[in-house]
Length: 194
Image (cartoon, rainbow, N blue to C red):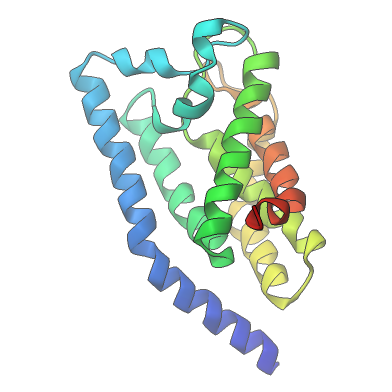
């Protein structure tokens, strides 16, 4: 019981310490979106266009772009929570995990997704979700178990986003983000020592 309380206390302290950092990241997304609106959504040209050379740059930039305020708002809340949970592993791990998700998930979208522009942070969100769930099994301890339970309890609805659904929603971005999060859980340790 002491180990459970200590783990919970550590999680709460870490979230308090990292909330400002994550808040700044989300504020950056909102600023980018406002600039995008002011430029008549010209920044969306930096999204992923599957199997087109101009879409390769979108692998890195698409998580920072959104279709409208509703899209950004729907991504902001889960991104805030899940990024805070991933930050429990430390900032170096957070950066590596984020890069693995963005690069592998984005590359898979570029290679396999349907035609059209793919933008939004939902692939990154699904990657964080996949990472936290997979890491429960890969690095099993009280803390990872608590994080896995929190994710399932509060975000199990995200699993529905892995299925094709609403037109105009990149379910491929969701599924490839989720898979890349699982890959990150099993591989991010390798990059921490480079």
